[in-house]
Length: 174
Image (cartoon, rainbow, N blue to C red; front, side, top):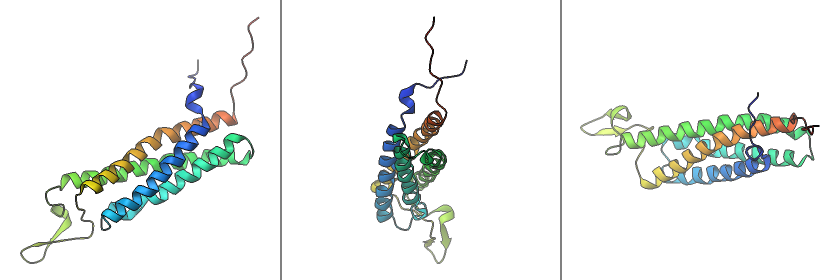
């Protein structure tokens, strides 16, 4: 007997609105994180910008596909939701690494592989990060957006598949 996912988990409109909200949060908090620590290599990647745009485009496309007005958008939603799943995973990985680097070098963020011996004092090299509570907060929010985006987009893929190939209607028992 195949496993059946409850219908409330496969609501395309709910997942598309969630993607819109996550995309907007990623975009806004990436700007804030870049403003707080502009020299951090993880912030300079800009995955919050690009990932946020991908999540927003996926949300808009899935929402329009859920209305049934444009059947072509159903296939686009399928491909974009897979891409949004991978993007959410990338957001999670990048900001987990950023938080790890901040926590690892909290006393002096420019030690170890981030310094070069020039004179008596070490000089920071570009991937050096600095710790601040605002930087940690913004990266934590972006990490959370990535963590939420993974199951949302996995369920969105399944929801689009169920819209494309719906289950047959149950026949009444005689």
